[in-house]
Length: 113
Image (cartoon, rainbow, N blue to C red; front, side, top):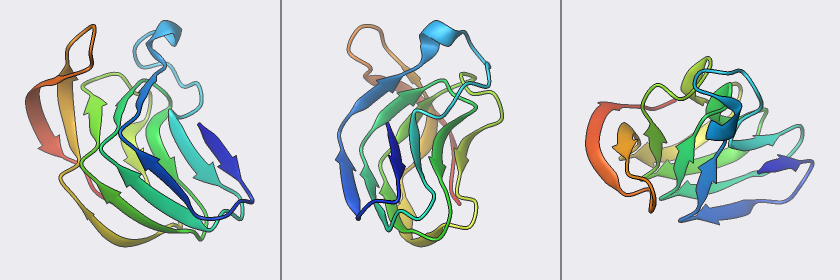
């Protein structure tokens, strides 16, 4: 999911799986909001893969809660908030996810901006 020069958006309870690129590859992010976008709410999503699994970029305002990023699946980091303005966040974790279904089976480190 990529957003450029757009209004505020809501990403609620989705699954983004870039695992077909292979673990740790540096392809684009599962969630990437950038370049003049106003920001958004990123809530309760499961994400696997990407250079950054979740990348909230530029000057947008974001609320980020309840997201799970598959352990060891990213190339650079599970979450990147470069220049984004995070108004609230919490309950975001690196996790183990089941297949199929992407249910959380274990939580590891908390991730934040």
